[in-house]
Length: 144
Image (cartoon, rainbow, N blue to C red; front, side):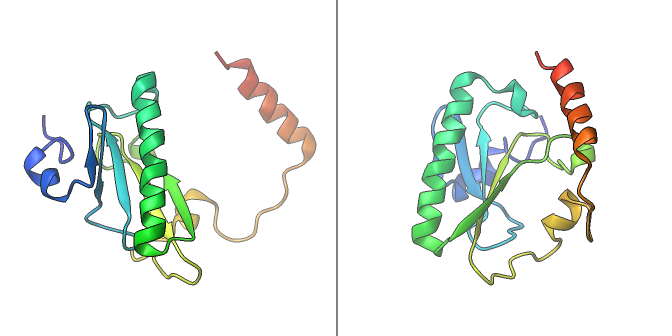
C-alpha cells in the first residue's frame, strides 16, 4: 500500500500520540503552528467506514489535542475538519481530521483561505424559507 500515513518510518518520529485505534501527528504543511492530523490506525478513506470504537477514539483524541494546543500554542479557537473524496480536496486517501489552532489576529493561512474553498466567496443572499424547507424534505427522504 502506498500511503504516506501508513508508512511508519515517515510518521513515527513525529507522532504525538498513538494507541491501537488512532494516532496524531503534526502536518508537514501547517496552516498555523500546531496544526495536527488525527487518523485511525486502520487504513480507511471515509468517516462512515470507522467502527464505533474508532469514532469514539478519534473524538476523545480531538479533545486531548485541543487541550494540549491551548496550553502549548495559546489556541483560542479551532478549525476542525476533514476532506472526503478527491472533489472535496482529499489528497491522501487515509482518513485524517485536521485540528488547526487559531488565535485572534493570526494570519495562519499560508497557501489558501478555507473560507474561499469551503464557502462561496463574496456576499451571499439569504435563501428563501420555502427553498430551505424543500431542501430539508429532500434530505429527510433519504435518511436511513
